[in-house]
Picture (cartoon, rainbow, N blue to C red):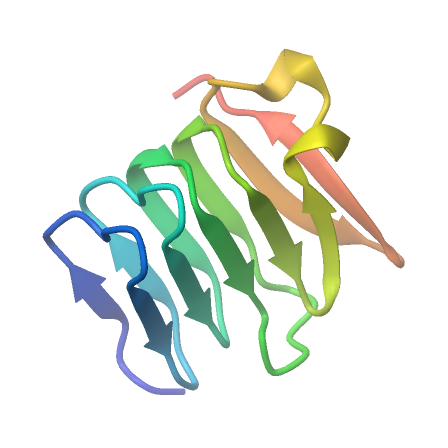
Length: 111
């Protein structure tokens, strides 16, 4: 496993950040049209408006955690939801996305 990749600046539209063989931590926002990818988990300490793809190499234990969910797409290990598939109760909430069996599972975080 590679060291965690930490990005301290906003990820802008058109940018793609990839954490090969490791986790990705974004200490800012991910704009619409931007893409963040990790073979491990993704932590976003800001608003996710773009696309987040965790477990890109098939790691089903990966997670996506963000402070404000407004994503275009969220994915773990090839399973994905587009924005219109995300239940409204999770929109603009602090959440964690994980996989259970073959399905994606989204829960709000209270921390």
